[in-house]
Length: 183
Figure 1 (cartoon, rainbow, N blue to C red):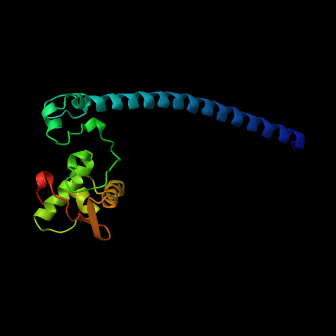
Figure 2 (cartoon, rainbow, N blue to C red):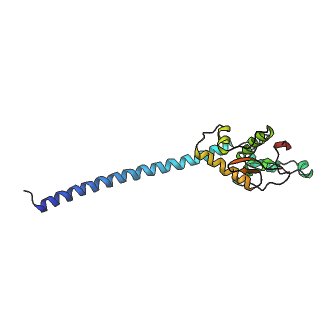
Figure 3 (cartoon, helix red, strand yellow):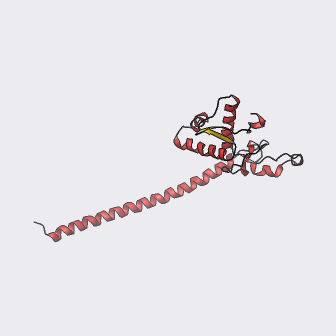
């Protein structure tokens, strides 16, 4: 029969082997994590650069960052509001709606929502839900996409661009017209 001390030594030896195995595994995971973090940073930089390259140019084909420099003097003198370049628009900033405010002050995502609702209004089809908008925009109707649209629609409601007369059903607010003044 083995001694108690011998059994304890065997258990201690097994525990030390297990600790060594776990330390080796932890070192391997740390090395993989370092590689993954480096790849992630490179990917983020690449996405940023692709975004800069693919940023929409204005109608004249100019870089939107330079469009502000070339606003025609006649347009400024005529009292027209100069066109705000896409690059200057903050995606999350939605100004309060007021009579005569152009859709071009909004980011493309918000303009797309207003466009869909303006089409519905023009065709007398009534309000839209965020799920219907998601499907209409050709996106997968998954909770993340629907909630992202709902957040944007709620922001437009809070700023006076949209109305939500029934919970979750959005339409253009009274007085808001489509592009070019079309209601």
